[in-house]
Image (cartoon, rainbow, N blue to C red; front, side, top):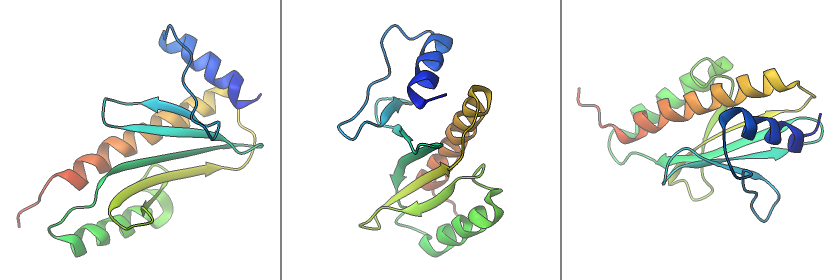
Length: 131
């Protein structure tokens, strides 16, 4: 199945009246709220997921980067995705590439895992921890 078919099925399943929009690059854009969205791209085969989660913390930066590295280790703290930084180093990013064909059920599981990881790391990046 192609990504366009998955997106139509997903739209119907979640009860959206309008099609999920695509950007100029042909990626689907899903808005989690007014300030946060992520993109889904067709890798043919497979899919790519990407999100600019939040600005990097300005305090306890070294501790935060250490947490990121631990989370990336074996994908346990990221639900299989990869934490990174934007090109300018100011924003926390999350990405995942599944470079093989998957079925619709696996597609939904990947989206759910990705959204959960976004929620968790958005909170981590925006919450100052005082030790």
